[in-house]
Amino acid sequence: MAQFAPGVSLILGGARSGKSSFAEQLSHESARQKIYLATSEAFDGEMEARIAHHRSRRGSEWQLIEEPLELASALKAVVASDTCVLVDCLTLWLTNLMMAERDVATECTTLVETLSGFDRDHAVLLVSNEVGQGIVPMEKMARDFRDYAGRLHQDIAGIAENVWFVTAALPQKLK
Image (cartoon, rainbow, N blue to C red; front, side):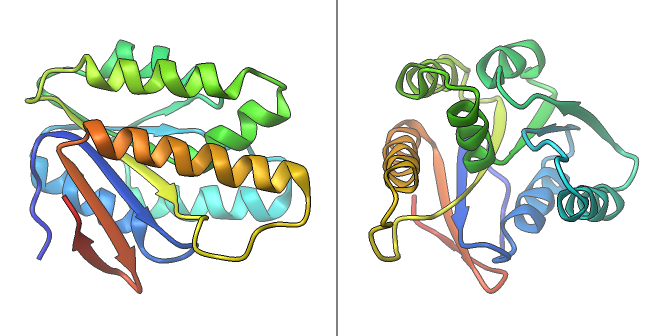
């Protein structure tokens, strides 16, 4: 059974593995003010439906902040000892950075440094898709994305107090 613990938590898994639901469960267990920091943007009907599904599942007890690019700054503004901030998701954030032609490596370093600066009693839950367990993509942009995500996951796992991997809605604690 899942059990909330303060600190930085990285929650990895494949698409539709139950990562977000698990992160929401941990947030409920925290008994803190819940803040949902969404990185997605609704560019089409499918994404609009996904966002609507997440919103209806969460309910009204969450404060929603939508921030597709400035993740480190948004976290600095809301992380506090009485909040539990759920970031969903890092891979969409990486996609946004790449599409905006931002310096992804620098942005990732800034995020990890920001996360490292939070007190251990703060609660930040970071949801992300594990994309490195498949074949090597043929396209350069897809390979770059996989590499950025893999490095970011390693860096966050290195500083996180908790790391989870979710498969078929079954969480496995790695750290």
